[in-house]
Length: 416
Ligand code: HEC
Ligand code: HEC
Ligand code: HEC
Ligand code: HEC
Ligand code: HEC
Ligand code: HEC
Image (cartoon, rainbow, N blue to C red):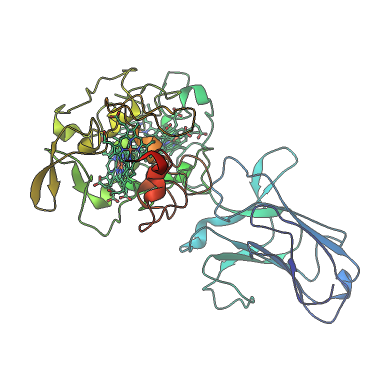
């Protein structure tokens, strides 16, 4: 293949399988996946003439926080150590700053992640290194003399335990079940060498305490992002108020809004809602200011009969219950009495024609039946995020095209 940018036609973001044979000594050869998540730059040299280079998607590593978007395996028929050295560019999930603690990692044949030797990182705003078509989401490596590295990851620093020492899902990893034979506190809190100022964690702010493990590229198997079409508030806002809450409205500083409103990191004072496989670390009372003054929910630690829809109504009171039940709601600075679509604990059932069984007896859908949050591809979306779909509604729904929500349950033919 002559010295041009060789893009793989078949390669998508997650599945890359490109093999290229260098057939020129005249120019630089660039091999990249179709969407530029991985790019290998081979300088012109007789050493590479007739040699093949292969880039393949590899399984996601565990135990390190990977910042590049995907993971790759490299192989070649060329002689290693490479002379002249190669360059590699990997796309990351967000623009990177303060890159001092980023390294290139490889998976050893002992099945362990280690920092690779050789290869010096730089990132796109580093003007001293000229690499074609870098953007702010790219991280690059110069001076690659051997193929072993295929992911960019954050180097560990500080007095924390290697995360995922406790992967037992029965006790939800580092969350809870602390005994004299476990050493879980240090997965999140460093006693002396803490790198963050918030409660000896890795970060300085309460709403970032979960990112290291559950953020994109984090080490936990369940990765969660909050977005503004779900439960992510814009931190630029002063206050975040739950829409549809009744007296006293749930309201808090938008900067500290996040995972810890709903979940307990230590699995303390949690509840196992009916229908869920575990407590999911859900706080029995996520809105304590209300002082147990809920219309349809009674916070009880360890409780197992109340449903997730009832739990949601701790912050969105007006959205739960029969459609005849008027509730006092705050609209901006005004209060008013409103009723909502019937929403029940057990949810609605369907008739043989596939539409909802409308009985007018208070058996309306659960929150999730109308708000499945399936607009993004991935797991753990409900009730966290929904990509670009407004209000965690169904995939494909837009601000001006919401009737599809209703017609999936109500047969328009039979409406009066
Ligand atoms: C999964 C991560 C994680 C683990 C493991 C963990 N913690 Fe925490 N811890 C947190 C977070 C996050 C907070 C902040 C909670 C908040 O702001 O609501 C916190 C807060 C605390 C606090 C401050 C409580 C307060 O009143 O402000 C103490 C003390 C604490 N943890 C001790 C421990 C001990 C002891 C262990 C082990 C038995 C432990 N933690 C294990 C994440 C963790
Ligand atoms: C040190 C790594 C680490 C940190 C930090 C961490 N978690 Fe986890 N978490 C895990 C692991 C490991 C599991 C087990 C399953 C898995 O691999 O995702 C888990 C599981 C969970 C579960 C699922 C529980 C269940 O019953 O299914 C929830 C919810 C959760 N974490 C929330 C949080 C929240 C909220 C924070 C921030 C306060 C947090 N985690 C911080 C590692 C971590
Ligand atoms: C508005 C409340 C709320 C917020 C905020 C929230 N969660 Fe959740 N989370 C839930 C509920 C409810 C579930 C259970 C959903 C289900 O299983 O149907 C859940 C489930 C989970 C699970 C388990 C997913 C699974 O597949 O078993 C993890 C992990 C988790 N949340 C982590 C987080 C993290 C990390 C954050 C912050 C980035 C966060 N959550 C913010 C309410 C919340
Ligand atoms: C019959 C379907 C349906 C059910 C059931 C339902 N929702 Fe909604 N919800 C919608 C639709 C459609 C919108 C967007 C249109 C609008 O804002 O009126 C919405 C908007 C919202 C909003 C933002 C606007 C606001 O003022 O409330 C919240 C919050 C909400 N729902 C929460 C819930 C919760 C919590 C439940 C369960 C207790 C629930 N919904 C049950 C269909 C439903
Ligand atoms: C701790 C309080 C709290 C709990 C519990 C809670 N929410 Fe929310 N919810 C909020 C807040 C605050 C917002 C507004 C977020 C924002 O403005 O970005 C919100 C927003 C929403 C929205 C509207 C999103 C949009 O695009 O406007 C929906 C839908 C919703 N919640 C559904 C649910 C469901 C379903 C549950 C139960 C699984 C739930 N909420 C549990 C506080 C909560
Ligand atoms: C998940 C299925 C489902 C969806 C989606 C749905 N509905 Fe319903 N709807 C029902 C059921 C079930 C009832 C009967 C509730 C009862 O028995 O109280 C109902 C009842 C109604 C009623 C009668 C008044 C009442 O609440 O008792 C109206 C009006 C209505 N729905 C309008 C809508 C509109 C408008 C939408 C779209 C925003 C919508 N529905 C979406 C299932 C659904």
